Image (cartoon, rainbow, N blue to C red; front, side):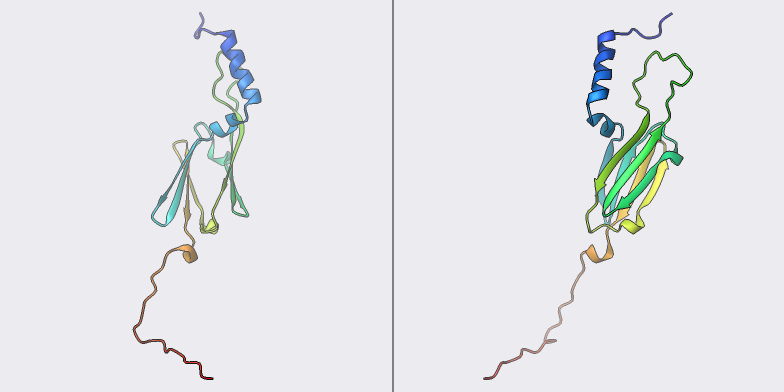
Length: 141
């Protein structure tokens, strides 16, 4: 008994797209990013990835996220294989205003969440104005 009807042309199209389309890798690690107060939050969807295979690296304000999903087809007869396996990587360019030394990473329910605080020196600050505090200098000739 067959579980899934197969269309050999559809399978061929999918394999061809996987081999020649570079956007496939980025699509395997979709993300959302937003600012919440003085913190940037980034969510990466990584279902089926073990936390110990996730690698984060920051070099010159470039954040690289790598993860690995094991091949579920080992020692099995594959009927359908649509979930990509292997190593996935994505790079983000972080602004100079972010404190890359204080990135926090949390992985729960297949979602990697990074929080990156805005650097203290980049935060807006109030400057108090004092009346009469500065003396005007006159230039004499």
